[in-house]
Amino acid sequence: MDPTPPAFPITPRNRVRRRPQRGHYDHETVFRVLDAAMLCHIAYVIDGQPYCTPTAFWREGDHLYWHGSSASRMLRAEAKGIPVCLTVTHMDAIVLARCGFNHSINYRAVMAFGHAAPVAGTEAKLRAMDAFIDRFFPGRAAALRPPSAQEIKATMLVGMRIEDASAKIRDVPVHDDEADYAHPVWTELVPLATVLGTPEPCPRQAPGVTRTAGGMDAYRPGRRLDEVMAETAAAYAARPAGD
Amino acid sequence: MDPTPPAFPITPRNRVRRRPQRGHYDHETVFRVLDAAMLCHIAYVIDGQPYCTPTAFWREGDHLYWHGSSASRMLRAEAKGIPVCLTVTHMDAIVLARCGFNHSINYRAVMAFGHAAPVAGTEAKLRAMDAFIDRFFPGRAAALRPPSAQEIKATMLVGMRIEDASAKIRDVPVHDDEADYAHPVWTELVPLATVLGTPEPCPRQAPGVTRTAGGMDAYRPGRRLDEVMAETAAAYAARPAGD
Image (cartoon, rainbow over the protein chains, first blue to last red):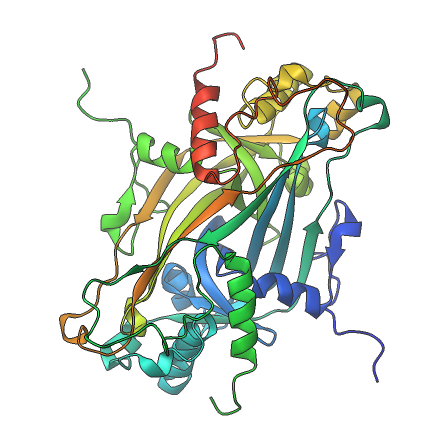
């Protein structure tokens, strides 16, 4: 039994410098923050100019995948992969205080570093296109009209192995310097959560079709998106072998 | 009267290439998306390696400001400013469909380009530190214990003029290829919103202090964060001259 849980190497680029006590490098913590998200922001460079592109993404083991449209200019230029930083952030609370300096945000964030390269080959692309659906809506891909040759061609999927990554988590209640507690200003913590609203069914639903079997069981009004994402990620990771 | 509303120049870096009909370059649209957010993601480059850092930010006219801790290594190296891309994304809905290709996300996003440089000088820093509070909590800075010399020294604020920017907005209901509407799978649009929870007051509130006069009127449980941000941004922009 290995007593050391799997972790990413600590390198100059992923080491948490400011408030290092908030840094985590173990796979479990990093994956948990990633899996609770649908959206990430990806930084990449073209001719010295940085770009920051938001996109949906998903994780399989130590690999991350996303749509490649925005990055396609540079991916076409460098087939070997280009360096990227993929960041996920959950804002959990606004934390007020009695001085400006102690105002803060509670959050869970991951920065993951690697080299992005296109998913190549029709079979691999088809598998990735199904994964993109099934990771968010378990079992839905098989219920859909299958991708056409034209759609496969028009879809660019990009993947990267996480070479190193770090999670940074702040979960601290209101606090102030001891001398400031007498200062007469109201302070509180304001929780934040991204939640699902009431679904708006397509008005052209096919006759007799119900909401079952579309992979949408986890999507219930009022639920937190991060909880739905964690639940569907776990269902996807536990899919039967060969799927 | 100028019939052309103010807009950012369209350049190779901000031009919306994919789905150009979703691109907007006018100040009003770009500022509206920015002002509805508390959090942004900033891409920057050190020695060819891109980084993507989440942070709270605010806007004044065509300038954006944020905390500079993460960028300080490179800002120390280049006093003239380093190229950055500041991105804001609001996820508004998950849009399902009858084929994988037509699944999508409704969103409002802005990519803003410029050169980031530290806010220099004690007076300018003090003004920026107050703005950082008052933009989110109108009038709160004056109610706080003022910053100490040590806090001013320890705070790094970074600003950039928006040289060019684009907004990209998708607001489309479920749609499918005409032939697919008969395909028997449920489809719907799932609205998403980041909302405020029930505030958790500091248990060490000073005696007799109430929630008034702390700039927190807009922060009510159940409200959407983007609406609170838009409202407080408008209050900050309308502050009396000289403040």
